[in-house]
Image (cartoon, rainbow, N blue to C red):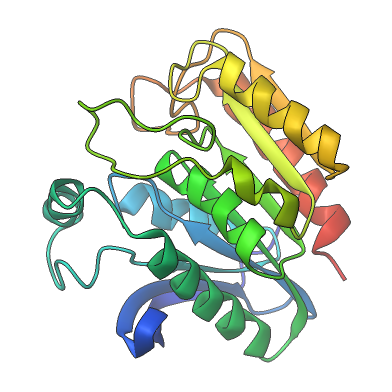
Length: 247
C-alpha cells in the first residue's frame, strides 16, 4: 500500500479521434508499475468507481477510467449521463474497444510504467472487460459479474447488445471472473457455459462464484454489498494482477 499518489480528471483521445474525459490515479513512489483500465458499471462514471480507481493506485498500479458516456452527455451528472446512455441502449462495442485501447496506450506511455496493462469491469463493464480482452493485446482481465456474453439481454433490459461468446477464441490474456450465486445476469449457468468454452479453447481462466451474493456485491454503497465476498474478491484481484501485471 502507498499513500503517495496523485489523481484527477484528464482528457484522452478515444475511439474515432474523440476527446473524452477520463479519471487517472497513479502512485508516486512505486515505479515501475503496471496499469489497469477500469471500466465503469452501467450507472456510469461515478464516485464509487473513482474510489475503485484510487484503490488500484494505493496498491501500486496506475489506473485509468475512461468516461464511456462523455460523448452523449459532456458535463452531465453521472445519473443523467447514465440515463442518456441507457436510452440509447448502451455503448457500441467498437467504440468501447477504441476507448479502452486509448486508455491502455496512455497507461503504457506514463513515466515509470512497466508496459503491462490489465482491464477490469463491473456489471456491463464486466462484459466489456471480456470484449476488450478478446479484441486488444492485454496482460490480464477481470470480469466482475458481466452478463450477456452468452445470451442477449431480455427485451425489457435497457442494454441492447449482442452475445460475444464467439470472440472467446481471441482472448489475449488470462481472465479472472468473480460472480454471485444469486445473480440472474449473469446466472451461474451462464458463467459455467463461459468457463466450459474457455476450457475447450485452452484459454487460461479462473472463476469464483460466491454463495449468498448477487449482482453488484462489490458496491459498498448499495444494499447488494456483501463484505465477505467483496473482501475475498479483492484479494483474488491483487493476487491475479500481482502475477500478470507486477514488474
